[in-house]
Image (tube, rainbow, N blue to C red):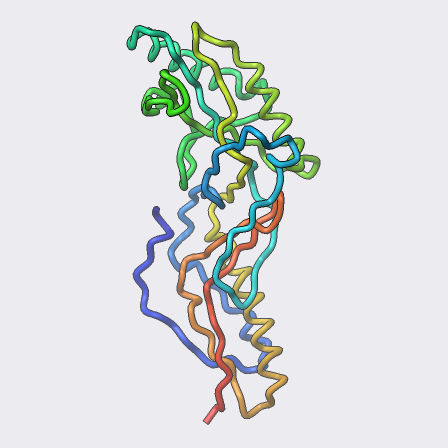
Length: 254
């Protein structure tokens, strides 16, 4: 994952109450530009209703000094196209043909289609046959998995995103015995988390400057971990928190 695997020496420095520290900026690790899935795909529980499908599933994460909270870029649901035609070649042809129809109808359905478990890549007419057909554990057929994405615009919440995905699934016509179904709970993605490094460092700077002021001019605050990759966790139905796994220590200046 370009931009997220970094081999830098650990950093540490003393922060005074001087406002100039807030001007520190960083793009350690580079921009990368990848779209990253915030939490792993959890398979749908057939007993869940629509409210359950949209609910938040907290994931414990390490503490950080400051976190930048913002709306994610996309709501994402993993879907599957399942086929159980007895002839293998025909079954595979039907699965791929329905996948191609999903790609062709995505714009009409107001969604985007993609692939990936952690790093999200567009699913296109040029690469959709790279999707691996695997056995379906719940039937005697086979399936492919891919992602359906909804941009989280101001008027789109989790329920609206799920409704749009559900409408899109119904829009895609069956091919032979192949059918398309929702497979995972709703999750989120963020495009290029590293772009928020500077904003996170600004939050850390403001917090540590205030801490240093409270302890007086004879003390400074040492910050470590600012060289680490930007990390993320889900903070709500459509929100994420971005942070650096940093820590502070108050030390006498002498």
